[in-house]
Image 1: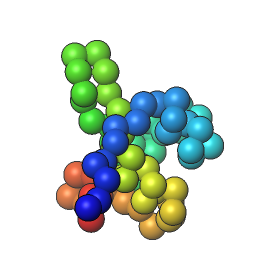
Image 2: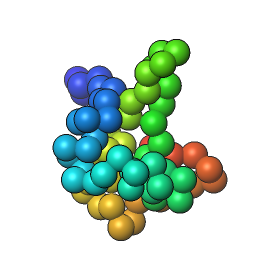
Image 3: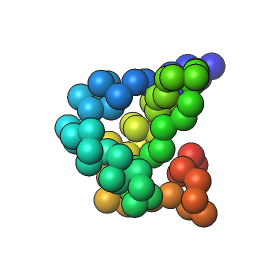
Image 4: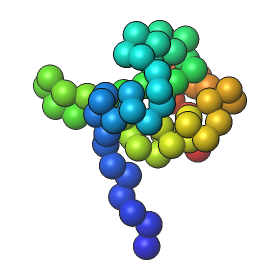
Length: 71
């Protein structure tokens, strides 16, 4: 049985990627970093699996058709 995909917050994403906050948001706009998902009215996070895939191969990660790469 596989583990459920966790939602991680910005601080964890910053720690795992080594990127700055502004770089993450610039890369999201460019389509070269996973977009965050809304988890509450004022909160958002990232699927841990998306961040793990990006960390494993950041050069080849890209969005497809305006949606995040979730394959």
